[in-house]
Image 1 (cartoon, rainbow, N blue to C red):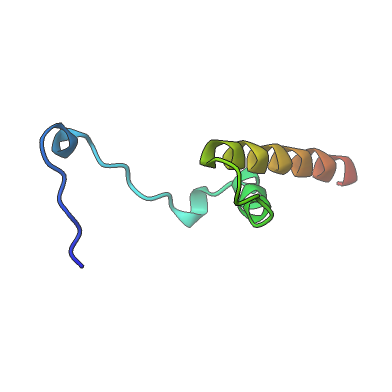
Image 2 (cartoon, rainbow, N blue to C red; image 1 turned 180 degrees about the vertical axis):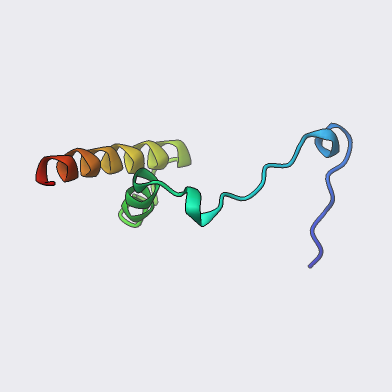
Length: 66
């Protein structure tokens, strides 16, 4: 199925380039895995907040152990 092209004002907005794998941080890495345990009943915003909170906790624990 073909993707619909943006029209009107949406067509004028600059497009964001995809993030390169070289730009992924440890925070992103931990958050990605924290998403696997997310609740399907929560909103996307709640899920994202919980994932990054968990990632932050992982980074703090990692700093203690290194």
